[in-house]
Image (cartoon, rainbow, N blue to C red; front, top):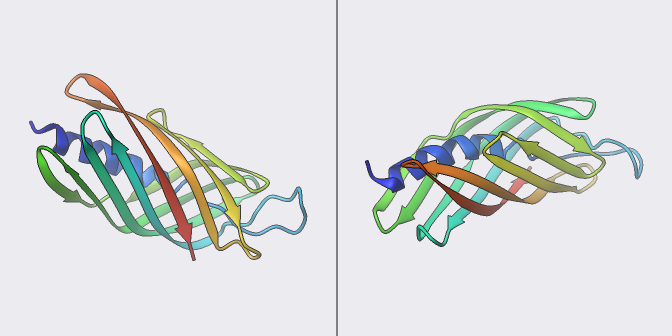
Length: 151
């Protein structure tokens, strides 16, 4: 099996979880930001060793309770390119386990760790970094990247 196809499948799962790193409004400097609602997603992942880059675009609907959030990604496309060719697939799915601390978001799914900063009043943008350990053909490769949520 082509490692690019495996990378794309794993990145698709990571991309779904990527949206868990989203953010929103506050009523004071130490308040929890309100991120309820709909967002657009854009992300970039890469691995220089594999010479592989991936981009993710889509939409997410986030539901927040206090400092935690869940959601659903829809209409997403994950496209990857590398020496083995190009691939693209759907990355829709649930968002679970999101945490908010003031203007900072964090999420870990055991494969990727996402961090981000919420900006805007009301919250209208989240930007951050992601680090993933992706298993491809029995070897684990690091993928790093950036992501943005906007509305």
